Image (cartoon, rainbow, N blue to C red; front, side, top):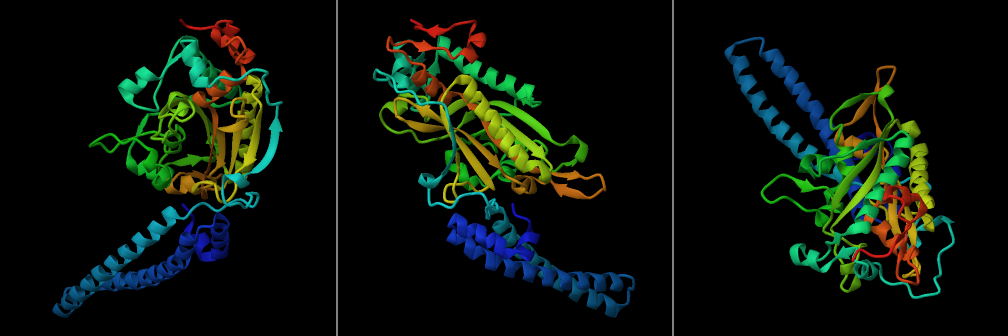
Length: 418
């Protein structure tokens, strides 16, 4: 949520950010928001003066004063109703206006105009035709998509044998790297109520892909970022407690629409997957350094796995509501001969924390909104796809990345589970 003081003092900054986002609808909101805020402040002053008069009359009990008090009371109630109506509209705008973009976010209409930051590794060009990751997983007895569809529908899967262990190994490698960097492992609730969810994000960005428990005020989490962001809902933290760096470990649930064909029997576009997520609460002065640090951690994992990747700076037409700046890290797919999104790294500045009411007390006693950042460390299913393609052999086996072999009991090659 944006700070109302920014709207009052520097509306041009907000308007310019919306122009970069090419959001004409919300750009039109700013003028109305300023007008409503001015009306609210003037009416608030009038109402406060009436309350002072009411307090003065209450000290006397004459018949004349009683009549005046009744009139004042009716007037105050009328103005309070107007104030509530104006406040509701102001809150509607503030909760839905997107975050102010950082100056380094590139302009662009869609994901085709995201800016390449860097590449790492040499993309593999196998001398043989690389099999679809879902197909080779089934052939080796490492996955069962058909039986998962039978009991749960498209977008679900069974992982078996070495592939199930590989999934767990990815999570453990990610966790070990983060613990070494000072992060605290967190296993959050997998269900959240609507109120804290609305504090974390604009549900318009997520509600169409979220699962809701029937007749319950509970949503299955789309990412562990969301419950971790809401963990300190409404709290005042001490400056010495910051930064708080967490490594969330969870299953994630999304009603992501899968494509017809092979993708329905694959691991790229699924409704349930495991993920290790970096999440940080920090002082505003430190958030941009943290953004680069989280990105470095994600890149370190892919370097350990020896999966070629690139990093892109997400453009104004592709960036989400809560983000001030976002990077994507994309791994190489030999079969698709392209990079596929594996990780995203976002600085939300004070946008989430303001919605959630999370502040910190500075040494001088003043209070300030914290900054929040999140970054995927590993989304296991998509990373498994990259491993099944990049480590596939002509003989139809899968090499185990060296970094994962200690977690796999020393296994160097997966030859099947049949």
